[in-house]
Length: 309
Image 1: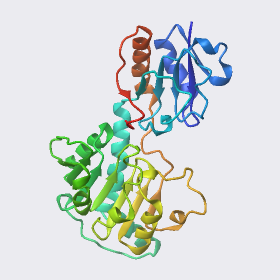
Image 2: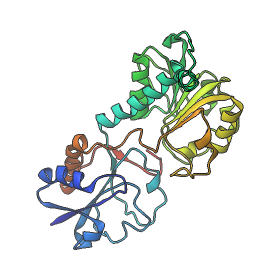
Image 3: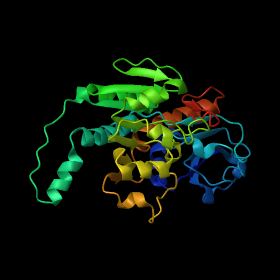
Image 4: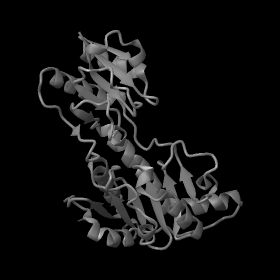
């Protein structure tokens, strides 16, 4: 017998187990507290498990990470050297692209100005700008970043992308490497941060780099809060150097109630939900990789936490 152990404070065990069970008839699916025999736990489906979570499972063969980010799996001493896969789900990519497109369009169409005017009962006309006149920089061109950049380009925006290594994406001006980052930032009227959190990207958007953005730029972060110096971002939003921000991630989550970002009327805050795992569309992919691991075959969509992706 094999057991799959589940852990997530955000995802539904009932939904995942109901969808996986038909694909995994010989596998018991349970939460950690109901595991009968830890030695039979061969698979784990988890999101941000606490330290020590994997220690009892000496025969673990595969970890499925319930999300795109793997930073919670870095530097652990309880995780054996086993394949780790992420969900590569078209619905997750569409959800992320939809969130970013909403945020970009909100600034491109000056919606915050109209929201203020409505609160003041004031008729306020601003002539719409052409999307082709608005430079949108997508910082990070992994699977989600590339998909999002292409969706923005389809809307007619002047889309530029930056990544650690050079990418070629039709319709996107791509640059790479730290030497080109300052110039990339200076050409981004709206900056969308979609990088994974790694030792190289932690604190990448320092005060000096944020100052490279055009005055009055908009900032959107859907990756990880620690990529940006949050205090410097707050100062830039106060001064107007950055006019607006849509923030789905923060250096501390939940964002503490006393944080000044909560009270800034040029900031839109959401609780880390720009894109989440969709069980209905991802269950079959998860099951197929479990079958591959059971047969000793290589898995798909493997990630390497030390790299961050």
